[in-house]
Image (cartoon, rainbow, N blue to C red; front, side, top):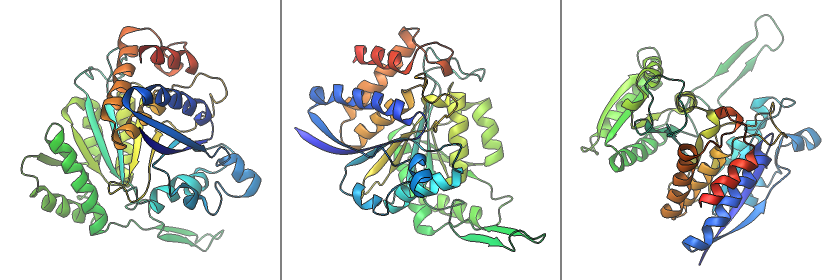
Length: 352
């Protein structure tokens, strides 16, 4: 039996509530599919730790995670800590330190979940946003000048490298070739004069290596509109760090709730552990109430299983999620129901 070493980082807000639900699902599947999981929990890597000690995680945090096969993260963020401090103190160092350059965000409208978008129907909206995850608009290049004076200024540099863009494009084209054979590239080369034309040139160059994939490109503003007007028209969407971040959250809302959406931060070469997390964030307004939607965390755990080489187990999870939503009235508050986190988890475990 294969054993996988998993790092658990519950984090903040509802993270410590949804991560145990994902773990229970994982533990139910292991014996059936011939694997086991051993966990190491990092319960104090959080904003609470930052408020107490001035750091989200220890200085040797990456070294503590390096020998793990995967990382499962709950959430990051607390009203008492600025978001740029919490994210740059935990999430982003892990992504960059472990070269998790692909952020994979699948979006699906499930039967039984009403989309707020007219015409977004179950079985028709099933897409994946492939987001470049370690450079682009979210670079560390820049700074502040003349702080506190009337002449104060802030400079933020977007950094696009040939290596960084090419590798995420290749991943997206290969994914499109395995799925519906369609890829859309998000751009804004009519307004951003250097980085986006460079992105477009690389998309066209890499596309020539994948003749079986039909591809096009859309300016980000028009693409956002089409995500709402015709979300079924997309299969794989590849985007820069900023554009992919925004598009995937918009798509999750189209699917009915951001509480559903999973994410994988992948190091495709497997030189380092990859990290899996729900998209919903820490949701401090409902933290501690036991009403958080665990689907995002559970689906993220399924992405982890697929990455670890257990696609059948991953499919069991997504099939069970789909069955709960299609065949029962068990819904958490964000989906218009009254079920608790525990209620939903128990129902799903019963199906498994």
